Length: 318
Image (tube, rainbow, N blue to C red; front, side, top):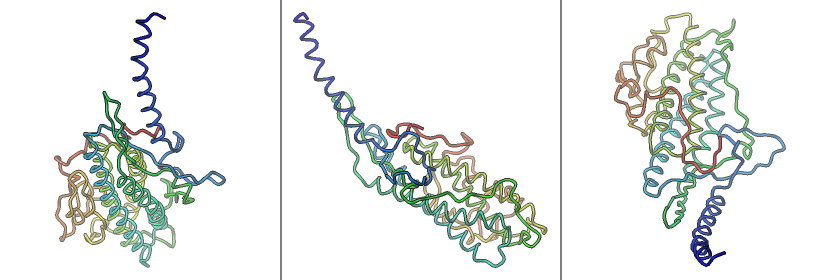
């Protein structure tokens, strides 16, 4: 090797070592469960209950905005999920709750969304951990703890099945009652709020947490199917479904919807789209007639019918 080539090689060596060290450091920071792991992963008997941390990688300049977007989302969706639990528990405790499919749905909501609240709490705990900034000299990036994977296995979680499209919404001894219609209407409004919030996060340029992106895919898929089931139950009511009123107090947890323009007043709002979804019901007298989802100017909505998982996440390979 000539002296010129040796000089060039000696100059390149520190850069190569720096790059190799940075890659190794990032790999160690972002090491976790296998790439096929998903948010909806369930308990597998015999498998090891190993919980791992997943990370988001981004420019340090956008770190604060990204963490704020995640915190806002977690705060809003957690309160929203808690509202779904209390609505379902109140319905199940009501002796006038009759529809077998809606009772199964309420039990599924309590079981599944309680687990999702645990996922959100773990995201919040990870966001409280400091980011690690990796400096390559010519480039810097932040590695932020984003979520905990493997909780389904650790907690032995099995998803409670939601009644399918052929499930009977009534039976000979269990007709659809007025209370069933109220629950279906209220939960449809509530679910639409979750869809709005999930899609708003997906459309937010600061929403970089792929774990939350995948959770949103689950939320949109599940709750869209559940809305279809509740519409079937409303249609099966023997009386005038349009005359069944839904007090604003029956819709819980909407005050936590702070992400992308959702405000505290959302707990008493009913949209025109929601009214259509529940067969033309008018908003209760105590509730304003307009919901943010019905507004053309609502931030982040309307661009896509389904959410997409965000890029920039160092761990997932879905």
